[in-house]
Structures are given as C-alpha cells and as structure tokens.
Amino acid sequence: MHQDMILRVQQIRRALEAAAVPRWGRAPQIIAVSKTVDAQRVNAVQEAGIFRLGENRAQEILEKLPHLNASFQIDFIGRLQNNKVKYIIDKVGMIQSLDRMSLAQEIDRRAQQRALRMPVLVQVNIGDEPQKGGVPVSELFAFVRQAAMLPGLEIRGLMAVMPDIKEEARLRPCFVRMRALFDALKEENVAGVRMEELSMGMSGDYLLAAQEGATHVRIGSAIFGARAYGAPAGRIDDTLKGDIYS
Image (tube, rainbow, N blue to C red; front, side, top):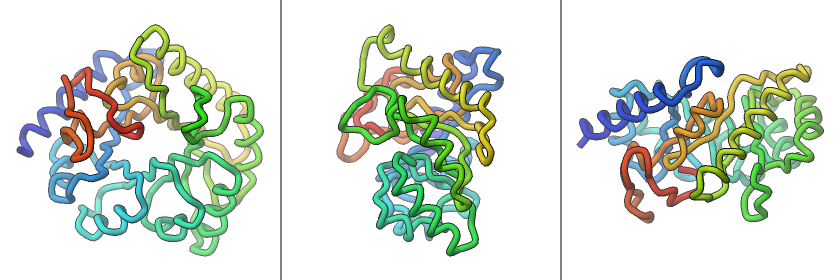
C-alpha cells in the first residue's frame, strides 16, 4: 500500500520536472495535502522525500499532530476562522490562506504573544469567485503593503485555489496571471515581504502550474488516493478535484 503511494509521488515528481519551464528555475516542490488521511499513511510519504504537509482544519491538525513525524512542516491551507488562530499558531510552519485584514491582525496578535513571526502566503481570489476565500486582485497590492506592517507576520508569497474549469484554454490564463502578480509584487520590494513562494496547482492541474511558474503545488488525492468523502481519483495526471483544497 505504502509502496504504491511512493510510486505515485515519484510519477508526479517526474511529471513536474518534465513540465517545468527553465525560466522559472527548478520544478515545483510538492506539498502533500493530508486531510482525512491517517497519520500512519501520512508518515510513510516521507519515504518518497516529502516533508511538507497541507492541512485545512484546525481540529484535525490538533488530533493528528501527536502521531506525525516531527520532521514534517505543516502548512494550514484552508479557510481559517479568526477564533481558530490561537489553536494552531504554534503548531504550523506556515499559514497559506491569509485572505482578510481581520485575520492578519489576529495572526499578528497571537504570534506576538508567543514571540513568533508567522510565515504566511496571501491567498488571491484569482477567479473572482464569491464562494471562495482570497483577496480580490484589485485589492492585492494595498493588502500586502498593509499586512506587511504587522510585526507578527512575514509574508512569503501568494497562494491561489484555481476555478473549477475543465478547459485548459480558459484555466491557463489564471495561472499566468498569478505568476504575473507574484513577479510584480517581487519587483515592488515591499519592506517585510519576501516573495519566495507561489503556491498554486492541485491534483487536477499541477502540470499547468508547473508550466506557468508555481514554486509549490498542493497535491492530495493523486498521492493518497480518493478521499473517504470524495470522488475516486483518476489517472495521475487527470485526477478530479473533488475538494477545492486538494
């Protein structure tokens, strides 16, 4: 069982390396989205060289953490309620889903209480979808400048959950635009901002992400198989996006 999972990771890594464009540098790194996956199976993914996990529920992090290998970095990648920040502030290595100023202020407050500077990615609502979190593109630059002034935060880059669009010709421009925003913010050289990570691409579209300049891809079902609640995973390069954060 674990060997199959390791083989899937190796296939994904080879596909990413083949898809990566030289001008972006190295191929994207894999963040294994481990929600609903038991700790024993998650720990086994380290045999494939993955040491970074994506989780999207505070309660699941707290329940699973004592059973995970200590060498994992856990990234919070889901919609984060302000009142849940206190539970995870010292449990995760990064919050990828910063999408509003009230959340930035709460992360800052809780981080300062623990003498931390929390690495964060600003989530962008690249498809302008009301049902998804993320800062609107029109407000992104102002938001980054304002959030960068909070001493408990360290902005490391951007994250996006792409629209659920099947046609590559319509989906690719979203990836292109995210990379353009990332590069433009890097050029701005805002104090307190380190534009190092562009987290975009999931089980169904990670090859597009690699082609268009992602530094990290968040892959769940293509590694671990179908979720208990979701549709079955398809081919390694054509997995259904049963959950918007997988």
